[in-house]
Image (cartoon, rainbow, N blue to C red; front, side):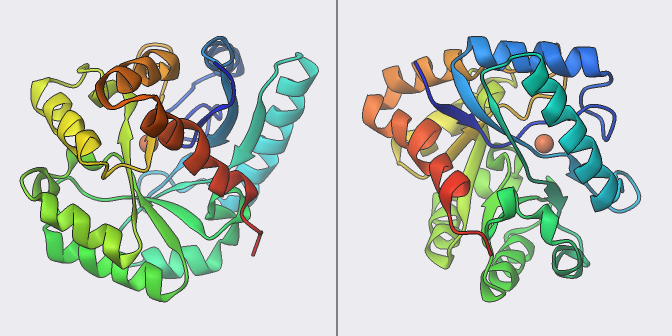
Length: 241
Ligand SMILES: [Fe+2]
């Protein structure tokens, strides 16, 4: 199995609540490589008052880490993105920090509060799309308002949003209800990306291969390839802004 892409994880060390050391980050990269993951978009958190590492510092650390991973001989390509928390300053934050865009494309990875109502999520998506971004909604299995309303997810997709769920949720490691939700939305073909959201060797550890196999079994090889290989290529290849 070659050419998988993980579009959401916290492997870049010492910048958020992800990998705590370079050694831990390298072990996570090794796990990804063993899983057949060829491309990894590193997406440290950005959230005011919680994770505020500057764009400059992240970029510097990313290039250092990328050089190190290359020197160590890993067969993976690293790219940079950011997981941005949707607060009232989201648009301002994105406009000020072009490097928060996924691999310099119009794609942006956005996470919401678990308890936001649908209007709030819809308003954010509307603003983002109006500004020309392609918003990817991170781990939608966590949002209460989307859980019971498939039609809300369809509406957001119609508006121009992309849907991402986590491998751990798909595989049932986050409990039955998230697993059930993931299975349902996969069967409805409402999901564009599945990513590890890996934070460490223990917490949401990289497990892309196991998840791809599960998805192949549940909804077929064709759709699994679309989610794990072809859709991520859009982020790796889209013309830079
Ligand atoms: Fe994340």
